Amino acid sequence: MVIGGGNTAIDIAVQTRRLGAEDVTIVYRRGPEQMSATAHEQEFAQTNGVKIKHWAKPARLLGEGGRVRAAEFEYTRLDGAGKLAGTGERFTLAADTVFKAIGQTFVPDPLVNGAQQPLELRNGRIAVNADRQTSLPGVFAGGDCVSGGQDLTVQAVQDGKLAAHAIDRYLRGA
Image (cartoon, rainbow, N blue to C red; front, side, top):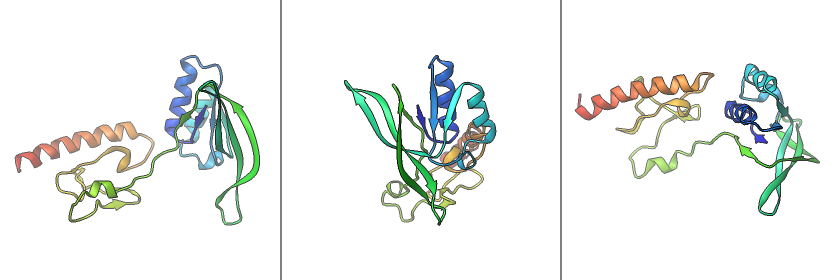
């Protein structure tokens, strides 16, 4: 079982299925249109034998003998204000392995570490210039912490290449 709705959830589910798992289910708290995984990725998962269950959020894991045996979920819906809400109705899915792929939230405070200025963010991601340098001197960033999109690996490699050249120039004082 994979809990989440992004490309990482799709990757985990498909690879788990290809490695021999008999049944793999992705459970996502909203509908298919709200998943950050593209429609193509969702279809890819399903054509590889992965089931996708929408409109459910995890409530608790059920175990026996120190091992997970199932997960309990609560059905969800959007309320009148468009916010996610539980319906109170629950169901259980058997599982011997549960992967959490629910994304991440950036917390910039630990990165400040006594700096005169906080780390600048843009749209919830680390702001960088063309050289991938952040607002903190000598600190560079790349990949999905600075941008989103469909080709995150390709973008991360490009960011790394640009940052490596910039770091070299920075260290040489050029």
